[in-house]
Length: 141
Image (cartoon, rainbow, N blue to C red):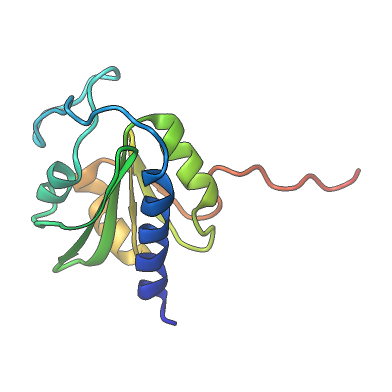
């Protein structure tokens, strides 16, 4: 199995798992070009994708997570949005640590490193290259 099909399978699995939990609404979003204050509503999959000239093909439409697939001149990637930061953190705890992620407020983008580096500026995200949420196992002193 190549890396990209693994990413697709993982994104679908994460969405299915998240879809089984109860959730609230997705109605509080801001426009894609607007700057976001710390307490602002998160961007949607569509708004994030529009920032990099992509119309996403939706893969997951659940209460807690939405995932869209994008293909641009920079490459292929998945855009995930989460209802809460806690849900994003839980998803990231389960994300494959060998895949880099671009991370922002209540969203992640999963794809090859060279693609994420190209998207980092337009999306204003933080690049996480390794296991970004789980604390490494301590070694005995």
